[in-house]
Image (cartoon, rainbow, N blue to C red; front, side, top):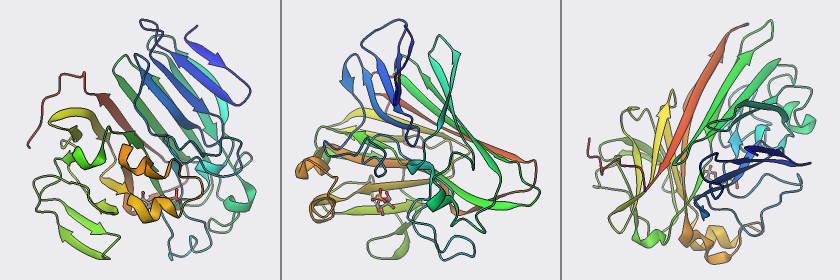
Length: 299
Ligand code: TA6
């Protein structure tokens, strides 16, 4: 069975390898597990709430209509990262059996009312359509945002992807040298001149307008663990909470879990995307694993 629909989640199983599976929670349409040959590719806190009581700590939370907190008109009252990740999406079913592909949708009727009501005047008509495709060595998540309203509105989008690593202190993220980032820790914008991003403290950087040809690679002791490709997502957030920040998050467990994760978050967050009535916007992230024959790229 390529697609298994349970009460609160959907499980996709590769046709060619039953040990390659993906689990998506209806809550937030959050991918909470991606196993390739039984090997977990994503990081999920052991204290992550999966009952809809709060956004999932780990996996691939979806960020819409705002990234972080914003003081922009119409966004000031929204909680961090908006309402897509804490609303129950509708499972629309399977669109392909091989590779297993499913869709989820969100609309104002389904959105978390406490949060949706804080976007603009709380009456923006929209449709979000998430398509998730599980290939043997690759996971593709695509979002389509449609303005079904009679007025224009604006939004951010971001896939808040928690990738698993063996040891963050041995890990690097490459292909960002020369890119401009806003460092949320030191509150400064600068051009990253390091040969690669390494981790020895809390790291929280928004790399803006990174050419799509730059495939972000997570490298562990010289081996490519993950490749992250982007379609129509110009920005990439790189985040590791390190010791103190993860210690302060009640749903972040185990406390040394920061050693086994790095967030590589493709998005459109450097400004807002504006959609006029009837317009739509589409973007994807494609994550392929170490087995993919993509060599170390130095573009
Ligand atoms: O990943 C970037 C970021 O904005 C960080 O600043 C940190 O706040 C992280 O998201 C997690 O946010 P959350 O609301 O899930 O605790």
